[in-house]
Image (cartoon, rainbow, N blue to C red):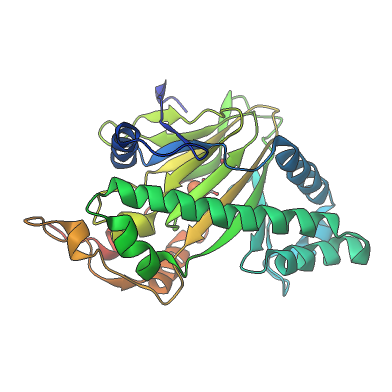
Length: 319
Ligand SMILES: O=C(O)CCC(=O)C(=O)O
Ligand SMILES: [Fe+2]
């Protein structure tokens, strides 16, 4: 990989402080330009991340045959083995609203009845992530102005649900290149995604105009937030769902936990008139969330290196 890589300074949303208008304007710019920012004082302790990571590592250290009991061909289907998203990527999914039941279903298969630690901590993590996501989306709606938060939070976002994907990246030991792609370029199918990445780094986003890769470096005690496709369409393109990827350094294992906060499956997504704004034209037709998820599923099979289609291809109106 030979692209130039640049670092950028993204705003940090401090959830323990009231939001100042000057901060809203920098957040608003970041959401338009990059679709990425950080959040801090989110209420999840370092101890909790450490626990989630160590229990997850323990799960991924199981033999492949054991993990495949949760794999795509099993009835649980929470585990994605290597060579689906990339050769170096494997993941475990824990879905809400009952995070406890979802995590327990996986843990029971792997460890039998004695392991409740994993499900309990993932339950707590999921509930916290739901709360954090709601607070973040309210602030993002404030960025759109015109009282969008009070107008649209209840009507459009109160039925949102979340799920997390714990990802274990194992880079190859034998490659000559200094870095390899652990997860190819894609956009997220969420409203927003809230990511914990360990200190290894490697998350990168693609700039709007020049298509340069920018490092989204790990920042202590902070989580990374990115705008997803559903929010890009709902906001009529005023919020950007950026292409991003994960690069891996040789020999360094990486763990991340991405929380995807999404509209309910049967939600009809159409930007409200007030969000489109007077004199502006609509850039997305209406569509249901599930139809978009299916469209992506049908276009992604067997493609590691990049996801060629996004919500623009699915529902964008050609201007
Ligand atoms: O592993 C990461 O840091 C991000 C993963 C990601 O982009 C995704 O799962 O959609
Ligand atoms: Fe992503």
